[in-house]
Length: 150
Image (cartoon, rainbow, N blue to C red; front, side):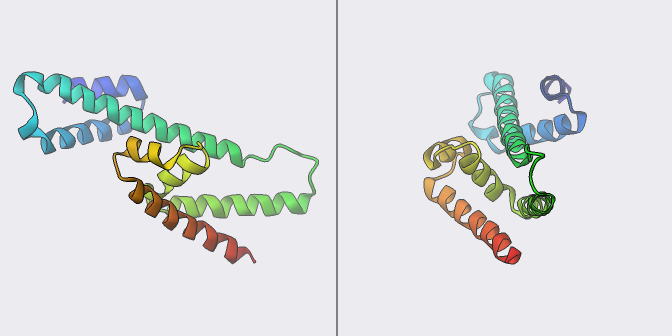
């Protein structure tokens, strides 16, 4: 486990995240143990680690882009408006953080990144119908946020 931990740690720079990802690597490996040739086990484990890191970096990129999109750039706005924007931002962030990861991920990938449902389905290894369902549930939560503002 130590070489995989080091590999992941050097890529992400966060010990806790590296530990979590290393454990996830071996869980995924264990799930596919019967299908993996013993001679190719090492390369398979590293492939899992690379895929998990790629997914992590993609999620981080989506989150960062979303956070940047929330920032208010114009200081010349009315102070009341700025307070309302900040309040809405806080409530939106709370709604997003309360949302299940599966729904939040699909919502941010589609609405912030502009990725099509089909591409999201391929990246997440799920069906397009599953993407549509997750998006629908996420939008219901976002709409409930907007109704509570009225």
